[in-house]
Image: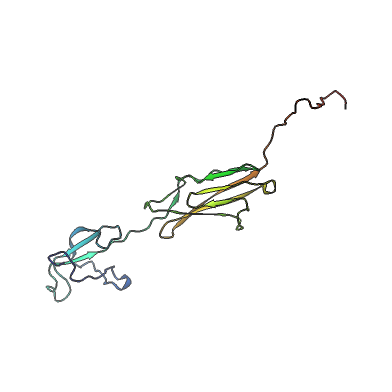
Amino acid sequence: LDANGTAKSSTKIASGTNGGPALADSDLFGSSVTAVGDLNGDGVTDLAVGASFSNDPPFSQAPGSVHVLFLERVNQPPTVANPIADQTAIVGVPYSFTVPANTFTDPDGDLLTYYAFPTNGFSFPAWLTFNAATRTFSGTPSIDDVSQFPVTVEVNDPSNSFILTTFQLTVSETNLAPSFTKGANVVRPGDGA
């Protein structure tokens, strides 16, 4: 580093990977280490590592050299924290279900992108829609939609790591109680008809 803190030169090191120099156990690298902040703006604190002298011939070639290590965050994928309970929609009744915000979690705190699709690989029935921005399923099923099918909800983090969970959506007819009209003829058991 120059006196003003800028690097004179830099070399990416990774113990032989990606063309970086191989580090041997005998290297006198790391005699002092300090955090230097996030120099490359990736959200991870980088390190400056000092070497008292080089052990490569000539041994006095690089006394007091400083190497900056640009550390990278290892992505941790999202996880299912709380599986979605099975859901029921009733024929003729507007249906709305919002995937709870605590269904998924991301250990890195990454913003998650939501997707939904039927597990059977077909498209959703015409009555059902999914709004990824609000995590909401909605629609009004008709009598022709009575069925049961699995629905998968998937989340992706910015590194394209993903996780999914599945729930059953059942569309059923409502079980209406009988209704009576005042003054209508009523036949009771035993009256004979």
